[in-house]
Length: 369
Image 1 (cartoon, rainbow, N blue to C red):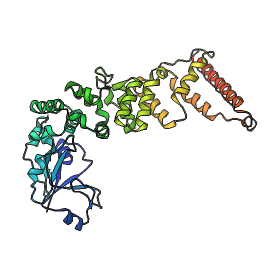
Image 2: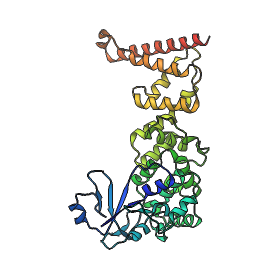
Image 3: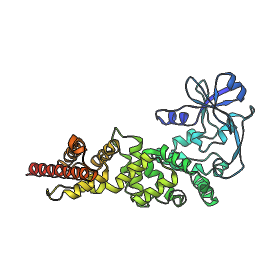
Image 4: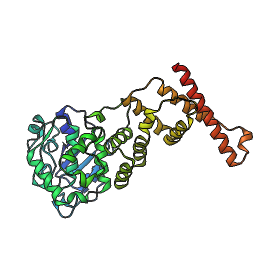
């Protein structure tokens, strides 16, 4: 049995990028031997094992043969005679087909180090075109690594995949996972797919002329979250509520992402452009407050953070809304009012919110004077 560090950990180390995850390939072993050594098996189609001490994945070296459609349409051979070079040969790009042994020596049969030096994304073998997922993976690496280009022969392989119809066999969950992994670089990810004519098949809602085409979408607040990054990027690349709804439904996007993206689409412009001008114009303000749904505090916090980060803060705008929202949230019915009929309670709340809105506008105008 020999164990090698492979894939992203080796690649990122060579690129000078902090290594987050370690993946290992095991040559000359078997499922029984791995279990005897205390590893926990998690894979069914091909043996993958977890080290219970580190939580890291160890996969038996394998070869594969195309047997069906999509990225799951393969048969695997994981017998103990499979060599390291055979395992590396099935990987997507040369920069991901470098291994490191226990002594730190690099095994690089496909010249991945040279491609890293030349900032080139190049496929390992002709088998590249058998797996449609690799179109998304190339798009992700292209988006992630600045100044990398895709080799012309790899572009030809991507074209083969697109023309074969294999992209249509990618599941919604797998497409969403690549989007999730791409994160802050989604503008370049989608631009790559548009350039290479894969967008219409995979993500037809994405616009050609998205508002992050300048790269603005890659600059985020220091305390940003994954949900905020992706939701804001989806808003920038799709823009319309109808497009966001369609995209999220097709890809089975988690609701927290969809909800925030829709909030940006439905409310950002009206919220950003709102200026208190008269105590008599409280209806528009209360309508906006209802639309952004101040009960969902975490979502509202993310929304406001991004509005002011990307569009600046007009004088007093943020304080005006924070105070207004706080006062509305702090309003409580008296014990006596709570006993009244529902319609009367609703009227009392509406009147109270109107007075709070008018008072907030009045204070804002007085400060402006």
